[in-house]
Length: 353
Image 1 (cartoon, rainbow, N blue to C red):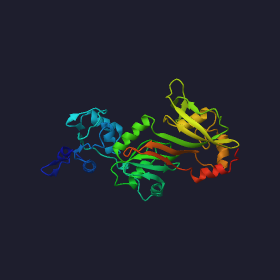
Image 2 (image 1 turned 30 degrees about the vertical axis):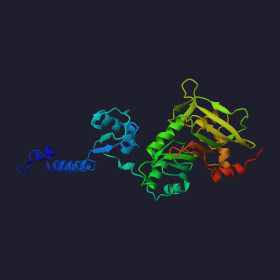
Image 3 (image 1 turned 120 degrees about the vertical axis):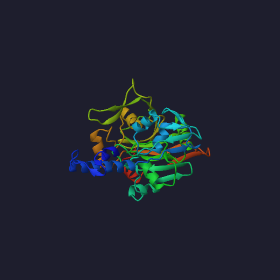
Image 4 (image 1 turned 135 degrees about the vertical axis):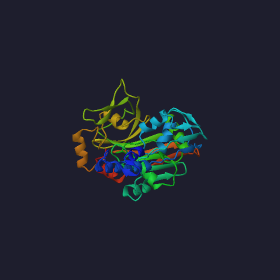
């Protein structure tokens, strides 16, 4: 770059026979902008020692968390090219870190777009009132309907980014599981890597029990206590992504149901997913012919219009309670989040049976 500028000079004087003034000044401006852009990168190589809490995770996931805003493709490229080293050796993306491993993190530009939302935004500050449990290991929040659990795909920020803004002194905050953007209710966040590993183990081994409250159209049969229907993600011609029942290529999906209360043309249900597929409860209800009230993705438009006319402006699906074993104390935990006021009001105007 500097060689190109030097070629325009001879003994400190501009050589007009090679460059016009316009071209010269354009080149100077371009090079200065380039130098400035380069200087915005972090030029220092970081040598990071893996803590006990960080041990056990894959190197690619470790880098994704450390280099917020860097695309996955870039992470895999620096791994493939050997720019990342563990104990001075090349590693593959699936390498699992051990305590005291020394990771060489190369200079890499982190996107400014990855900055956290302001902790003064109403949507962020209101989450403080939604926390139902917190200790050194875990934070459990009653997520509002309409808020995504994380940013991306046109969403500036979600619950996890907002919590990181509220808890800027916390070194570690990661989602233990996810719930749909339109679903409200209990969401667990780990404050330590060890807690995340233990909670993921409990999820894999079906130790965690999650119960939802949902209002479905029609009279749910008393005999239908479980729905075992494999699910597959599908893209429509319009580009919309939905989930469908597919007995050939779908992933095994099981939900247990119990009737909580009957109304004239609706049923309040407790739904307990055994597996954790995307939109599982919503599609399993639809499969039984009883779609969820307020579900603008899977409910008939006429039924949707009827519930909207009665004041229901959201999906009637709420993560009501969760049971698990505390990852540190081994105490049995049972947390509950009651239905929000608007859902309770909607039920009160229905005719009970």
